[in-house]
Amino acid sequence: MSSGDIYGDAAARHVAHSSAFLYGQSIITALSGFVFWYYATKVTSPSFVGEVSSLYLLSSLASTLLTFSVPSVVQRYIPMYEARGEKEASVFVARLLVAAGLAISMAVFAFIYFLAGPLSYYFLKSENQAFLLRYFSFSVFFGLLSAFFSGLLVAHQKFRLYSMINSVYFTCYYMLALITLWKMRSLTGVIIAWTATNLAFLMAFAALSVPYLKGRARRIEVKPMIRYGIPLYASNIVSYGSSLIDRYVVLFLSTLSSLGIYNIAISSSGVITSLLSAALSVTYPYLSGLFGRNDAKRMKLVVRLTVKYMTVAFVPLAIGASVIAYPVLSLFGTGEYTAGTVPLATVLILSAISLPGGIYANALLAQGKSHKILVGSAASLAANVAISAALIGPLGIEGAALGLSSSSVAYFGVMAYYAARAGVFGFDATAAWKSWLSSLGMGAIVMGCEIALRSVIFIPVYVLLGAAVWLLMMRELRPLDESDAKLIEQIVPAGTRGILEHLLSFLRVREEELSSQPA
Image (cartoon, helix red, strand yellow):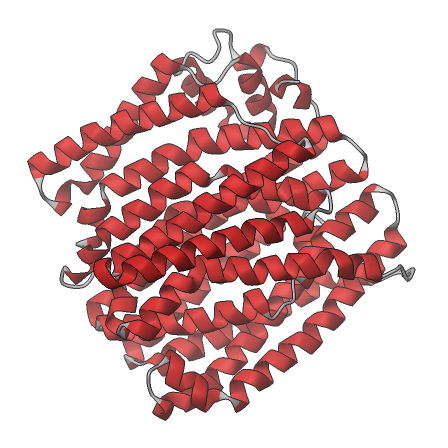
């Protein structure tokens, strides 16, 4: 099967359009976060940035571990029941999600509120700031419950609506925090902004979820969902540790200032790596639907094409961002954040190498093999703990970045192995080496230009030069073919087809006009 075999698939077209909206959301989120962190480094100290980063660790602990993976479970079962035409079962699962969300969110709120003292000692280095965590517990409650309601939109594949709301949400989340930081110069103001934003969008997501909760519900057997969810939850626990253990080690063994500098580097890498989560978010429900229809061949094809297109799109972004990491980080604070250059480049390059891991994991989850994800997450955690413990001492935050990056590489290796055994492994070696070659060539030329000019005012020049070099190399290497052009034509919005026609013509993907292809 080739990419031409997806042509005309309305569901695939929906997934691709949804990816575009989620990419847009990722860009808006990343830019909003960049502006906030940039301003915070200019008007506060690395220690303050470390305090904000520490609160992020606490909120992510709640949103990742204390949801018990319920949203992820229903994001498999709702599309599966919908694909089978079992609407009443879908309504029951949706109501179960909301009930679980209310119970869990209230429990998490109580945990943070009543244990604010010891939590403050560990996360903010002082029990005197316990009052801040009591304020923060309200923000966590609203944000956590919102995640359950928004999970219904994802489960029903309303990605356009979901991404549009989240774009507004993250803009408000960061910009209101920036305004309160400007006015109050305190952590209290940031917490107030986050709490207000989370409350407002909880109300929005709850209102939008009402149609999925109405109607007749048919009780279904919950035990299969629990059996599916237990290894998934266990893997989420391990995945959380593997992705954030490095920051916890920096927090507990070093200073808030070190955490602040390290977090700026990792957050900057998130501007690029967040694009991966968009593809993963939309492919999971689609793959679950294919599994519900027993379409194994199309599942494998979707995996291969997703890996191919993500490799072509993500690798040049990762290499380009790595090359200009130093001048970009020199814009933060008074220059002290350039210590994060090597960690930033390390995370980006190894993320590009291991990007297929998440896509393989989605295919395995769609097949109900959540226990395989647990194995991959365990390997990921083991790699992070071992390398972080060995290298953070002698290398500092560079060792922490190596630990974090090793976890994604280990996860990729395990997921690729299990995907191959499950018959859903897909990888286009030709497109991969062409993407890497063009990206490395682009990176070498930009780095030479950067060394010669040595000024942050030329950052736009570096970006434009890199884009031009990459396009020229892609023109010569031609990693995409005619069937890719045919697929791309049907999935892009109609208003962008004129630009796309010129781009594909320049890249010599196809000779004939796009408009000559069937609609």
